[in-house]
Length: 344
Image 1 (cartoon, helix red, strand yellow):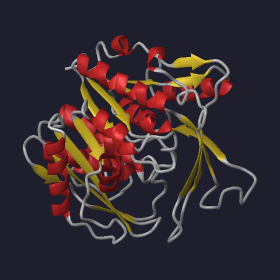
Image 2 (cartoon, helix red, strand yellow):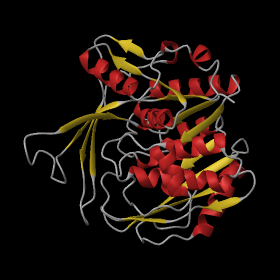
Image 3 (cartoon, helix red, strand yellow):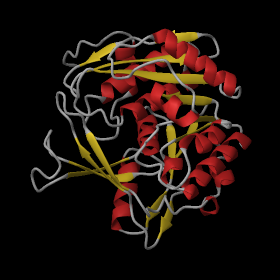
Image 4 (spheres, helix red, strand yellow):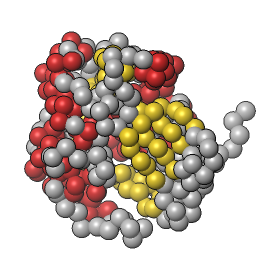
């Protein structure tokens, strides 16, 4: 079966300090591009799938550069809305080290996506042949207009018969336009078949509490089984809940695993100890792409969650927002080859 994956959201200019230095410790920043839904589209394209990213971009050289970056990885950009006189959102990244956490500073106000309206996109046409649609909770946090666009896209995808996923992705720094996350997100989740989240996302976006403390470094998986069950109880339209389980020992060392409440049972993935993290930003998006791919291609739900966790584990070794990992590499790790031996 041929698959077409569509994602909608914002791609940003990413400005990162060199190595693990503080922002502006030296008078230079590394400039790349990234953003939740764009990251997912790129990853799916690298896995060999047909992926399209829908957004609004400024009709200028910066917007053109962002689109070229997507096209470089084979992502379809046919339905991107070009807006004259607008701007591209920016985020600044300071990569942490040891006990100093990474820091993100947003500069996204009045961006092309923040000013977008549903009528700017023909979502019925865009979703016509889509088999899967994905967005995140970052987009509806940007502005009321962006939230309206995300909802319109989800409705059009459901109408077209596509599977709909949403990564809740709570971002405290973005919810500034007068709405609280649950009043927006609970409406969007009514149109989702798949929810991707961590425990804080579920609490902050849906108002469903988990009896856990993310700062302890230890995880009680029974808590997550109960949490997933409560999400499905409150949202009976949801078939899958995939929860990432990150144990933050330090900025350089995380424990990484996930759980999936699927249609055939509740599954815990393989656990990875990730030392010497290169870049964890985009780790959640690489997981989202992995679970989307896994649930699309594998009947074994336990293997699907292991594929997603392996994809995300590998992303922690790659600089930049995008997960430049091939399907064969993910499958090798998911099947147990984590030796890191040179491939000749």
